[in-house]
Amino acid sequence: MKKIVQTSLIVVFSSILMLSSCVPTYKCGDPIPDKKIIGGKKLKNLVKERDELCSNLKTEENENEKLKGDLSKLQTEHQNLKTDNEKLHAKYKNLIDENVSQADQYSKTLKEKSDELSKKEQLLAEREKSLKELQQTIAKKDSITNRLNEILRNALLGFNSDELSVEIKNGKVYVSMSDKLLFKSGSAAVESKGIEALKVLSDVLNKNTDIDILVEGHTDSIPIKTVQFKDNWDLSVIRATSIVRTLTEDYKVSSTRVTASGRGDNFPKAENSTSEGRAKNRRTEIILSPKLDEILNLLNTK
Image (cartoon, rainbow, N blue to C red; front, top):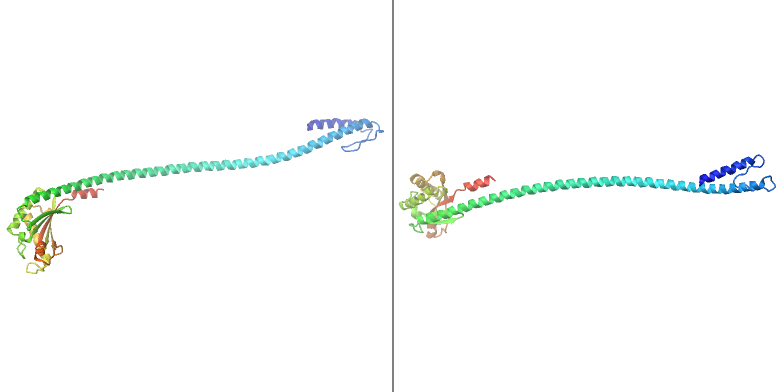
């Protein structure tokens, strides 16, 4: 529309210029000339049309300026929105990258935990297997101990209970022989009845070679001091050694299976205040235990 107005103005001003040689020049807003002036009526119409066109032009120019302002404002808003969009896009990309990174980290952590769990499950399975093998070995040991106890009880039935006893303690077979059966007072030489008992015992031991043998000598609390024995401890050690020699030299029990030990009066079975108690304390205990090689091997290999 502005272009149309400008075109009309050009026509009007062209007409005015044609008359300018005989009439004065008029601008937008100038007063209408007197009718007496030559061509005044026509000029008046042209000036009126001019004023209208000028008014329209002014309106268009004002509107144009307003549109320019609105356009500038919109361009600013557009730039701001574009900047905000770029910031949001960058933030979104960072969040995506961060989420991907977290997901990768979670996956890595989950795999590590899964691997750790698998290792622990494998270790648990191995330990359960070892425990089962150990339980089987202990059960086997207990079975041997019970069988040995039964065999010895049957083999030694000919001896009185105050001379010899057989019992199981702590998974071992204890054959307890009193000094009444083995030795004379103050002596370490084995008596004939004691030798008979040791022969029966050695027959069982030679048939059961998976048994370790510990011979312990015990005394009562009455001190002894002779040319042969310095004290009770010395007496208990020499008596235990005498039993070991009888088993290994006379009855061929392997010496690698036998250990001699003297306990003196340190481990009494009864009170030493009575003669009966002291008699129980004067004893030799032959402690028989199934070899622990299988158990030790299981423990050492795990």
